[in-house]
Length: 259
Image (cartoon, rainbow, N blue to C red):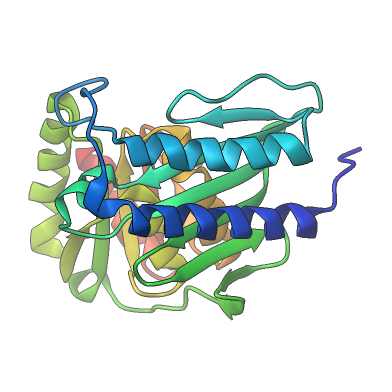
């Protein structure tokens, strides 16, 4: 038995994501950037760490038996069978350089099954969220992916890790995809998926992500009617392809051929 009120879990995740987003806005002018992590483009700031601590501390206080998997290392094992997956600041390069959007991402799993998801975009003050089986919302209002544009007119989101191997892979995908699509937008993975859920993007591709990059966005997208897949039927952190149902066959076929 799950033994948890999913609405309460959702509401706490929304509250914490908004609080973390407010902290990020308040501290943007005084942030300190630390040493790169996995590679030169994998940056982290003291605001990432403070945001994660805020979220982890509150979830641990509410559900101390739950496991937490968090990007900046504040996770811990649990005994309940549930796991919170947290990216406190998805899009750190955008945040630091002031060149694009970023978000706060919180997802709850029971085993391998996603239950709750929140993606909050601080600058726009927009919160995308979902509880499994109940649909997706944007600031509390239902949202659906209903685009019927063909690939030649479609706006496609593209997300990828900026390490040398993945950049080369993304180059192959874009070389094949861009001439055949309406246009592309490069975005952090969570917002790529959330924007598909809201119908702002017709489809999207995420390459070589981590679970915390896509966990929340994927549930929100699916609950909004986005078709998700990967190298085969299921999407993976290696390859996540999303699209409105009418676009899915054409987009997935083209991306799989080059990814």
